[in-house]
Length: 113
Length: 119
Image (cartoon, chains in turn brown, blue):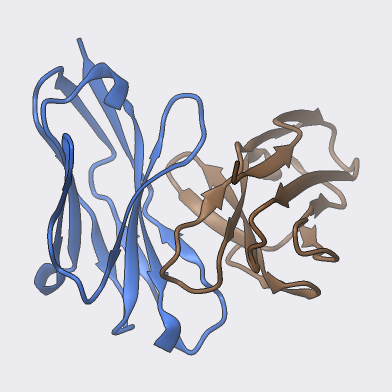
C-alpha cells in the first residue's frame, strides 16, 4: 500500500529539548516536504527536498532542520523547540512535477511547553 | 507569488442541503494545477481532485462536483445532498507547473473552510 508514515503521532516536549519527527515514503518519490498547520493559517511549507542530498527552505523554515540521506526518508529536526512551534505537522511526498497529487502522512501533533 | 483564498471560514448546513465551497487563486504561471483536499476530524489529509489549468471541464464524482473558471480564477467545490460524514475542513491548493522556472513543487494552501453538516 502506497503510504507516507510519520512518527510519532503525538509528542509533548519541553522547551529546548531536541527532537526529531521521522517521515518515510514507500513510493520512490523524488519530492518530499514538510508543512505545519495552524488554526486560521492553513498549511505552510517548512522545508522541501527535490532528491537525495538536495533540500531547501520553504516559507517558514526558522527553527527547523531537515536531511535527505536516503530517498525514502525525510526527518524534521527541531534543535531547540520553542512554544511557538506547537503545531500539527505533515510530511508529504509526490512524484516530480507540479501536476501530481501529494500524499500526506497522518500528521504529528507537537506540543512544546 | 501564488495565493489561494477561501473566504468562507466556516459553513454550517443541515443534512441533504447542497453546499458550495469557494476557492479563488492568484498565480502568474500560465500552467498550474489546482487541488482540493479534505481533512476529517481524525486529522489526515485526503486528496479529492486535481485540475490542470488548461482543462476547464467541470467534473462530477458522485455527490461532489467542481467548477473551474479561469476567467474568474476560481475553482469551487459543490457537495450535493450533504451528509454528516461530509463534515470536515476542506482545503483548496495551487501548485506551480513545469514552466515556472522553479524547482519547488510547493502546494500553496488556502486557510480552509470548516464544513459542519448537522443531522
